[in-house]
Length: 141
Image: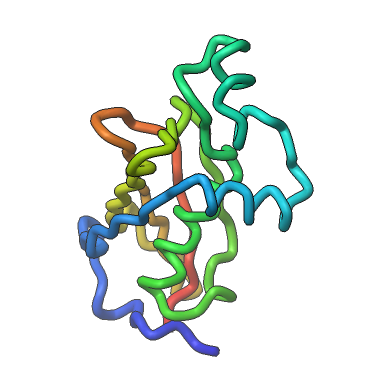
């Protein structure tokens, strides 16, 4: 695949279209199976509360993966992401009723050589920022 976004059409400050992803406990159970991370804080409410959490929380890597999905959906090619990193700033609490919503936005922060750009991401769940220093380097068409 080739990136669908061209280097020439973006500038520093170009905004990526915001996206929201619903998260429910079934998503967390499926992710646990795929990742092998069966920590009960991600699926068992009584355990999560016993260790001081407000409720079940999403896996950090699940949250990070949704940020990666946000970028790859924008660029149109998963192989275009050449570097990606985040810091986790708050857990994504996933109540049994209604689940949670991850909201992503982003903007081109820098244009590099070789058709690459740095995309800075913002990720929120409710009013809380859940990722900080979230950046992806993406090679555009």
